[in-house]
Amino acid sequence: MRILQITSALCLAGLILLFPQPGFSDAAGFCNPWFPTPEGARWEYEETSGAGRARAIRSVVVISTTKDDGNESAELRQTVREAARKSQARAAGITEVRCQGGDLTLTTRGAAQGKSGSAKATGRVTAVIPGLPAASLLKPGYRWRSASRIEAQEPGMAIVVDGKRESRIGKASSIQVPAGDFSDVLLVEIRQTLSRAGSPPIEQAIREWYVRGVGLVQRETRVLKGTPDSFTTEKLRHFSR
Image (cartoon, rainbow, N blue to C red; front, side, top):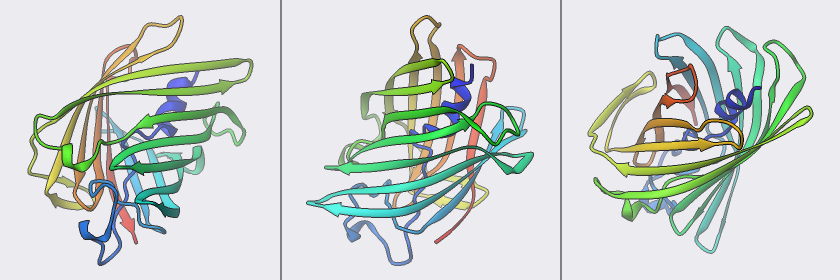
């Protein structure tokens, strides 16, 4: 059963990186300055295991943006490929990012392969995942709770995974990733529980680093209970505007 692979490939709670175009700033009217949404931008991430082995390459492009009564939305096309087989897509999907009153929500619809090297999609996913609260709240020590739902379909099987999160803002001053060095950093520390009927819950500790006017630049996920893969890191490798 590949629900975890499909989920990690396509459900992007905080894995989307949106860089501003030249001249963009907080004054440009972004709904949340920690998560701007310029149209046409492209990024590439690399996911590695705790042992440092490259596992996947994820590409993201913003294909459209809209604004209505102070709210914003953007559509992103993303593709996940195996690091060792970059010519073969492992998963693909469209994510809608909605920003209302500064609060972010992400909805992803996509498909994943059922077997490495296969060209046929055997799993489909719809996921609704909370993003960041309004920027005015994001100060060190601020805490909040949120929930998510992932619905996956495989041949002869429908799977629903409910997620509960407890998040807090930590302290960070700078971060270095392959794409460069960044300051004015927001660190989000998360404890997440994923539950599916008939299966033991999966507990995770997650850390996400955001840069004002840039977006998410790194994410670490440590599994505390529920799966053999104990630690993964995703970092930005390069981007184009």
